[in-house]
Length: 298
Image (tube, rainbow, N blue to C red; front, top):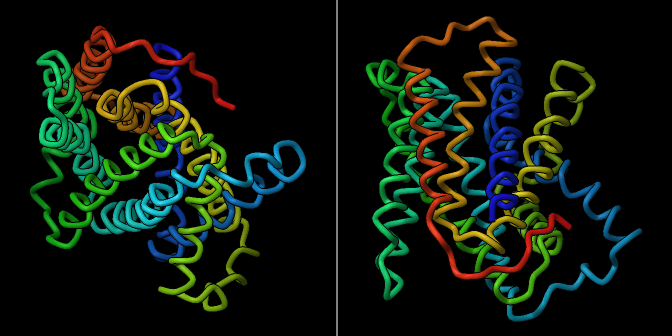
């Protein structure tokens, strides 16, 4: 269980890095929908190459898992696009905080759809991490400059983030390997984007600019392929609410990276927020789950 939780924390670290790269690409003229579209194409190329060379058996996921993988692919499109719209129109801290209402949403869905409500300790952990995400990201200040479209996009990102974790967990319960889940999910996402925004209309010539090309590559590999693989593998072992709680470490990493790389100051409130997130993730891991298979990333 600890290994799976650490995998989600590592995924959150990757997402925190990718937000910085994505914001830089937006400032250079790449739109949120263009970035969301490109990241899945970049991510799927090395995945297909690896599966074709090393694990051809995973190119065919179990048939019972396919409907959930289609939902997973649609959720990938929705969460990426809505999140990028949010960070394009809001302060990054506000956007991240809105997305990380997801753990509370997942807990509420679990309470509504299952016979057993999540334990009170898990609820406490979810609320702690949400409060911590708001504090560490500085969202309480950014909410003074509210953009209604950005706020709506942030909440949409939370809902679809919860949806992709839940659908990945459901596919895993039906025998889908994490790599198979990502392959089908990314292919569905590519198909949806091709219908919404034809690939030949993407400004491919812009990739010749290293300031844009390297950022798109980083978002596709570091911000998509690696963290999605870690998260999808983890929800085979730990519950979706616990995975969503662990993912709230992203704003902690984003703030720490901004401090290290950009010289941004971390004040007492942000440090308190980081402590709340860490306390929430720790509390979530104190909850005993039913015996689960040993976590393996591959």
